Length: 253
Image (cartoon, rainbow, N blue to C red; front, side, top):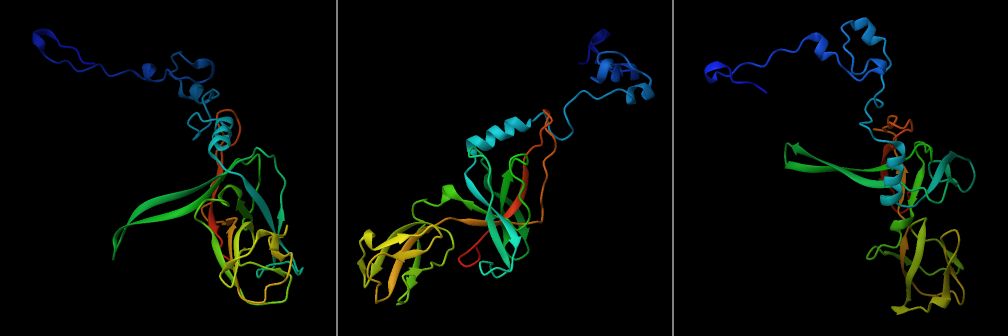
């Protein structure tokens, strides 16, 4: 604050001395005047870890618990078995605590395009606590809480076949909504969803084309670019890590 001197003239505030500037919260020197820079540099820093801005790992864990969602984590492993996908991988379910939650969110920015002006560019990302799960590039995550959202039914047309069990386009299926044969809805007693997500006929196998409405479990692949490891929080626990996700379509799971 500046004072008015004699005659109401505005006086400049005095410039602080080096001794006044160096009163910093460092170690036992907090609140003391330190003019020896060598002694100052030798003191232990008692503030929070760099870049954490006072956040704690436990507070971020609580945020994930409250606002996150349930997932099934599938570890990607190279394999030559018949169950391997087109990339030669199988996906093995991993065990973790039931109360673990992750965040799946859309990160969007606005950029200037040469031809179309302002455009929004988005990226889906996964956020997780690194002391709860430890995914690697290529792992899959099934978004269990998104499997039964209204208005998201998939449709499959199955040609006539004598097989008792039929695979649907999506690998992971939450529920069969309805099955139609010759435009007539089948009773639910005619079919079941097997544990490996296939449609099995429990009665006579349909002889005509069949339309199946079902809800799939959204599957995401963890990508490697722009992977961010969280810094240590002020409680010594690491803050969440994040990485981009790719939503997998039918046949990509």
